[in-house]
Amino acid sequence: MDNLFILLLIPVLGALVLAFVRQARTAKQLALLVSLLSLALTIPFLVNFVPDASMQFEQRFAWIPALGIHFYIGIDGISLPLVLLTNGLIPLIILSAFSHDYKGGFYALVLFMQAGLLLVFTALDAFAFYVGWEVALIPIYFICALWGGENRIRVNLKFFIYTFFGSLLMLIAIIYLHVQVPSGDYELSSFYQLALDSGTQRWIFWAFFIAFAIKMPIFPFHTWQPDTYTEAPTAGTMLLAAIMLKMGVYGLIRWLIPIAPLGVAAYGQLALVLCIIGVVYASIIAFKQGDAKRLIAYSSIAHVGLIGAGVFVWNVQGLQGAIIQMINHGISVLGLFFVVDILVRRLGTRDLAAMGGIAKSAPVLAIMFLTIVMGAIGLPLTNGFIGEFLLLMGIYQYGVWYAVFGGLTIILAAVYLLRMYQKVMLGEVNAQTSNFADLKGTEWVVLAVVVVLVVGIGVYPKPLLDISEAAVTELIDKVSLVK
Image (cartoon, rainbow, N blue to C red):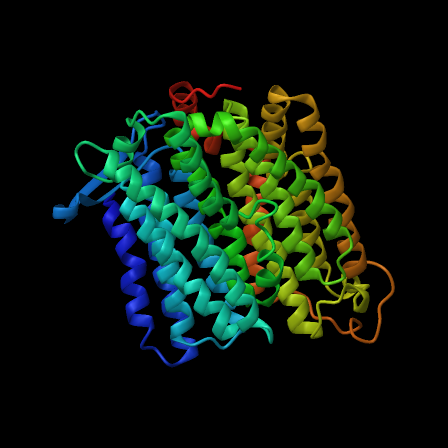
């Protein structure tokens, strides 16, 4: 079955059922079952997908015909990898939460967010895209507010204000574009065909860019991120870092650049510089962190800065690198945050200074953790290597110095991530870490799957690259930017 509407409907139905489940054990099992069903239903789309530039599996329903609004969705080589990422990581996120006694409401919010994410990645109508954008925001707000740390209310308010402001700007741009469409609809293809003057495209650029830059986040729109990632429960942090930030990158590729190419020609270089600044700035701050979760949060800003730079150079290598690196970053950052969750549950602290020598009593965790760290750094034959290689190749074609400073992400990531590994796993055992238990149960399953993906994609990335190649090439040919 390759009915795309069903793929979006399953997590919604699962969320509605789970909202009424009060027993934690039943909620866990049901949530995992629904997420695995969503993953299974994704397989036909992958099997039946033709790796060309066309939009496939399209479905259109009249939603509010009087206003020109349709529920119009489809998949191509750019959106399919993100659909796979979403439905592939949600079961791992749910499994990672098994060590906590969350009831049905928590898992209902996770699945509801999954539906919003899928709508963002498949929407071919701007109204549907905006609905998915907001639907994905609401559950993560409640996840962070209800199950977050002691400063969750203050931090969550800042997160909400940032994202709501960006969403409002994007909504204004969408309404303006809708008014310009002769047929009065919200379809992406109609927006692409608009002949907007340079001045209009410039403000459209900023309206979309700020919304997407906040979500990713790009420097200097990042200040909500470290606090939110740190205060959110681990499953919430995984949702934010592994999947949700990709909404912003996808928005750049699918909506911003094709709709406002003259705006990108005017301000794209500035956006590229902001991305590169974020790489260096966040890496330096990550090095200074003593809190393991906060360190990985800044690491995420650095890595997504390089991904954003790959988009704005607007060539095949940069865009291909951005798409595959979104997948790789999602996998690696999920694994890193889960390792931190294991450490916190065993030791009761995220302070690196309180750790050490854990590899002696937990060798399996040490090996898996090291593999994930190597993937995040971009060691050859791990998943991060091919993405960073393509990104830097694309950035180099745009300008050598951009590649030089962008490439610092590899060196600096090696410094702060290996430093973290050394402080956690090596050195002398202390009173807290002397009886550290190795992986067990679902912990082993989650990290084993992550390690297999890190190595598997690193050794053989061709299937993922083949999915997006034709769509990327056609989009680059169709949308030419004046450099």
